[in-house]
Amino acid sequence: MMVEFIDQHRAEYGVEPICEQVPIAPATYYEYKAREAEPERQPARLRRDAEIKPEIRRVYDENFQVYGARKIWRQLRREGVGVARCTIERLMRSLGLQGVVRGGKRRTTISRSQSDYPEDLVKRQFTATRPNELWVADFTYVATWAGFVYVAFVIDVFSRRIIGWRVARSMQTDLVLDALEQALWARSNALSVIHHSDRGCQYLSIRYTQRLNEAGVEPSVGSTGDSFDNAMAESVIGLFKTEVIHHRGGAISTPSSTPLSTGWLGSTIVVCSNPSVAFRRRSSNRCIIAN
Image (tube, rainbow, N blue to C red; front, side):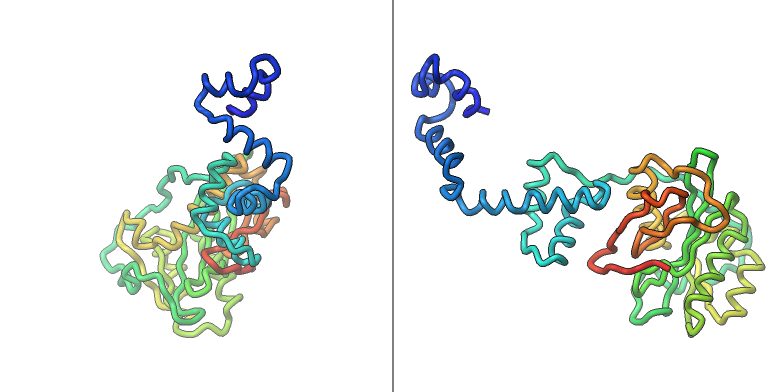
């Protein structure tokens, strides 16, 4: 920085001679030093930046350094801190902070060969006017030090809340069926529910289809190999793996049949035995607690 350079050499050469050789006016240098001695002389914007930067750093660190500008902006608004999103972006750049970026994904859907698929009742319109109007389901893999495990989710579209989840060592029908059972238990009074998933063989299995029929839940599936037809579930999985698994260096150990730690509020569970990995996540502008 020019001011630091001048401070280091002013005793030997003087301020004005140095300023003649570097791109800074003497008046600018003296004004900067005056503001250091009297902080109240700083412009209002700089004083405001000095107040906001610690808040940005606090929210960023509290959420395991995965939040980007949008999420930090929304969190500060929830706390009553009025600041523009563009200001958050500018200050994050000056602080060298950046939200975690999503990586690639593997395909886990194994389509079943059949002709009588349930209809797509959602048509990529992932909206609901009430709870238990539309559920979406999917599962993903998680790498642990002891090998791969799989995590299945059932999500209520209206509240974006996880209502059913399951962790298992294999991706057989029991994995998704147990997640469905938890959702049915949690929402035992649900009526006229649409259950939407991809065309994975687990979701089209006889046992899964029969359980949906017994519960009075109407099945809906998207097309083969098109993640957009189940975009909300894919989004939850992407955020889960980005913010919890990849950013934290992977799950610590293979979990037991029942997940040991719940914590990713509003979206999913943490599949590891280390409670410190669990943390808060807010979905859009809502804060929703997972079961």
